[in-house]
Image (cartoon, rainbow, N blue to C red; front, side, top):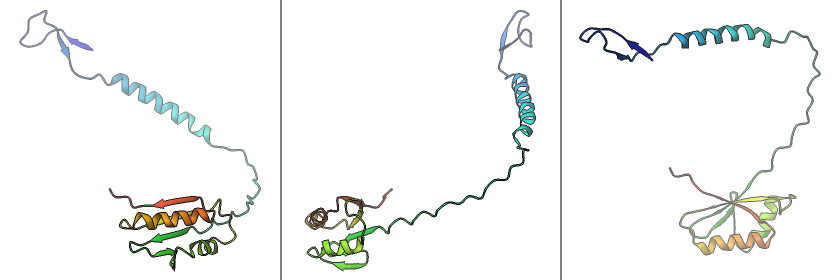
Length: 143
């Protein structure tokens, strides 16, 4: 912090604070950093020539298509776009999953906000009875 020893309107020995920021040390530090980065930047470039082998990677298989169950307010049940009912839901969901393991398969359930809780629980119980324990519920983000 600087001090001002004399000025207009004050006595010879009045001391008042100088409220201006001294930017000289800041500029000095910035110039030193600039020089350091200018000197260090060319050292980051690699000049050693190396012949790299081609990258050969096996393509990963596509993830399986997710299975969606939709429940309408009137109780209609759909697997994907095809209609089903609660009695045949187990067979239809196994057909939709195919040869994949039902214990590892995740089933996504979309239910209308006006769907009865009993209809929803009927679908959940039928999924558990057929070995599908990994269930995800889909909702909308209302912000």
